[in-house]
Length: 258
Image (cartoon, rainbow, N blue to C red):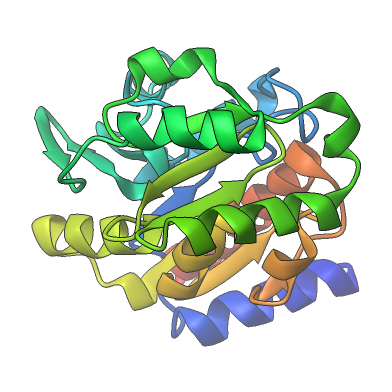
């Protein structure tokens, strides 16, 4: 066993108290895709998620993507009928849809678009709660300017979050969040979150990572996200995820023999 794998085994044992995880909360973009910024899913990673579920560990997609996008992915990837979409604003548990948000952000979209010269994302027409903006190509490589943009928006509109994921800039109500959605889902399904695992890559995943018992991030995750992680994986995007899932399955099989 390599040292990296041994370290992951050790963290799993300590954080899960020697038990197998009750649930895995996993982001999509930058975690299940071949690279950050890519929309191409790594099919080998998807197959591994199915194998994890065969070991009786449910997988909950936890994404900033629009509700219909995550719904479609969950169904066609063959994963458990539970997911969190739109950065925690929307929760699906089997056939029940829970909207955590209370009001529309459409009026803010127009204001922010004009004030900061940002083009609204085409996906906004499908979003139930959160909204998104395209980031100009010349700005994508300057993370400091993007963070300044996020701060400027939230200073003007303190009731919302503004966060860039590497794909689009999201705005959503402060009554929402992936971590808050996890707590609602856990109450509904009787899941002990201290025995759960979260896997992410961007700043919208921070509250998800803090809420789970074990926080795992891919090797090219945002620097702010790496700081809250229990495990920073050695590779990028889905290559990191595959390494972790492979190790997790070995860990679970070991526990099943005990």
